[in-house]
Length: 178
Ligand code: PRP
Ligand code: MN
Ligand code: MG
View 1 (cartoon, rainbow, N blue to C red):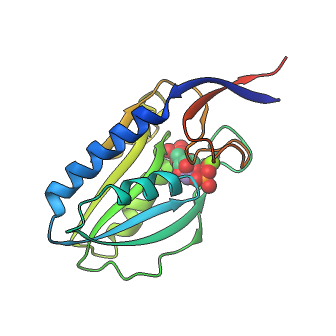
View 2: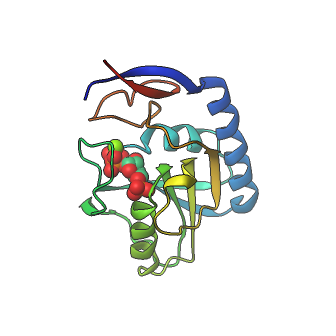
């Protein structure tokens, strides 16, 4: 199946506004403290970058990344989560914020929160730009949510189809080509 870009679902201005609101919310809770912000490669990279840039300068922000893979080149989750890169940081006793671009089935986030909790952080919160509640297979706690979206395949602002379109500054839906 061939896909092409369809409509803009969330434009740059709405993204920027919401990212600022979330950064403010996080800032109120963590001012003066240290926060380890963990991005899930590769999709969370753009969101994480913009989010930490908007955070209060009084938060001591450190970043780290994990890479997992579940989708590959398909638009459907395989349901299998595999760790490709682990953290470099010891999160024991730390305040941790796990950042994702999207929560779909919930398998990735559920797997990662379980894994990170075992490492005994002081606190662990989740921050997700996009939530597709209609597709949830496992319950996950989302502490900071950007937008709730309908069950459509979306790309841009970190989200890809077969590795493409992550660089787009807005969120687009895809349509199939006849
Ligand atoms: C996508 C997305 C989330 C996950 C959400 O990642 O970035 O990490 O799937 O799906 P789930 O809730 O059904 O688990 P993907 O595996 O495509 O890797 P990527 O971030 O490198 O694109
Ligand atoms: Mn991802
Ligand atoms: Mg992907």
